[in-house]
Length: 370
Image 1 (cartoon, rainbow, N blue to C red):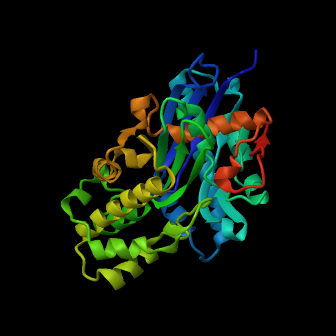
Image 2: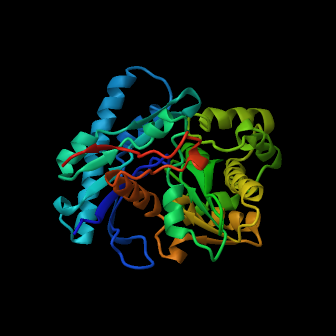
Image 3: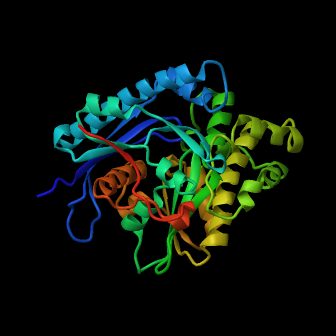
């Protein structure tokens, strides 16, 4: 009998830390998988700062990136072992761990993307086979290399009973359109938490606006929101993907200087929440018109102010966290990479050409044996 237990590991553009899960894909009829255990390992402040700095060119980049890759690998291994402990599972019994790595640059328009990782070190430290480097094969086939989670979203949440959209709100937001019949579609809608996190760190000192409490004290600045919405990315047709390469502090500062100089910081924070909700809403209205249910995962699902803004944007559609459909909001992406590792070991394609724009289905990931 084949082993169907996999770990999945994800550290996203929010730069908050590492999420790991252990999942059983022999979960029984009607269930794609069962989450057996999970762990979160926060980034040390110094690593978080380094990863933020590596989003743009600077001195001694190669050495700093190599050092960060080693530090990340150790955290990934720690998270895998912690998730195994949570599941009461010996890591040596896992079929593999899917470890995405930390995206620091993403330029599919130039044919490249960079995820920091040392998969061999993860395999050594955790004692598991590791599947990593999921994006490059899709890029080589002419795709965006992202988003990669829609195929898993389809397996987990798709069905003939409803037209759903799954929205993941991390640093960048992406959506998966799951019609009751027809092709699955997906793309990055634009900034998720990245700009509001940067603004909060600059003015309040913490890494993020917990529950959107600070944003709730402000009022959106309409001219600023409209100026940001004029960015050409939002009008681009999919396939498309983006990252901190495009949406960063200088991008925000330029729009502030032109459209809202002197705006009160809480009002800017409220505007950034409105931008995220509006761009997600516009994307769904344009590309998933008939959707009746929107499931939200990622850190943004824990932001009550953002969830309220989404509910208003998307009414009368139902807006729910994925936890209402049985999957914790912080586990969905990590589960996706456990699933992608399973697909790689089985020799099955993990991408959706309609999503990424690749020339065809491709098996994703490089395998590092235990």
